[in-house]
Length: 139
Image (cartoon, rainbow, N blue to C red; front, side):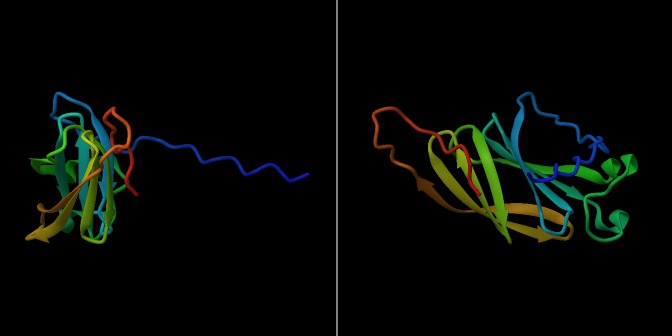
């Protein structure tokens, strides 16, 4: 028989970014450079956080409680399709799966250390059944 798999490492909370919103976040994605974060939630908005690069010593999320203080919420904008169920990022293209069955595409751009979103396209899923469907995951 196969040997037992190695035990999983224990995870510990390093930092907590406060959510100033009154509705929960459901999806989160981190930029390749580790200094940007996009979250979507039940309020139907995409929320952008950025981390000060000078303080971070380059890329990466940071691994100390002190590093949480280097993150700040930059902006929010509506995704345009109801609740945000999922987000995925490939390069600078952000895909957002929405409650109404649509997938919204955005261009994520960084200028002077601040991330911004530009709307590119909205693809609408047309369900085959009489009941509405939701996009639950984009990858």
